[in-house]
Amino acid sequence: MAVLQIRKYPEPILKKKALPVQHVDDALNAIIDDMIETMYAAPGIGLAAPQVGISRRLIVVDATTKEDKHPLVVLINPQIIEADGFSEFEEGCLSVPEYTALITRAERIIVKGLDRNGSPVEIEADGLLARALQHEIDHLDGILFVDRLSTIKREFFKKRYRKTLKELHAG
Ligand code: NI
Image (tube, rainbow, N blue to C red; front, top):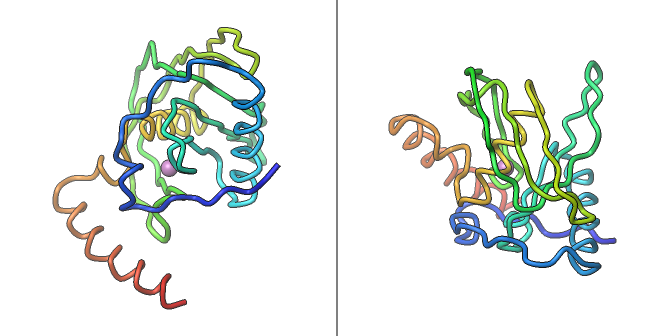
């Protein structure tokens, strides 16, 4: 297992629509293990394959908090098949360091996909798990949470982020 390098905005792979996974095999499971290790090392509550330079439809999420236990979720070719309600929450992203913003998403979703054995699974989620799943699935379509900001807030973010990148590179 290895901790992979996390790609940062504005790297082009983060804007690309990822391709479906064709084979759930040992090679894919090795990538999944590396992604899980990378997520925990960061630390983050979710990671999508494009964030580690792999443009495939694969996510890992662990939305466990002190109050709320969730199993680790590995989803291959995830698809949101139901979404309802709205919730607002402060989001961040491992690919967008030093920035968070209030983002509106569905409150409850049902997602289907394959687990790491290649078996079909369906997950009903609300709260932080629903949010993390929506955020990671967005990554597979080349959408970052900052793409969901209003135009004015996005312009403000871009200005601030240029400074952040300079500071990170200087540091
Ligand atoms: Ni993210």
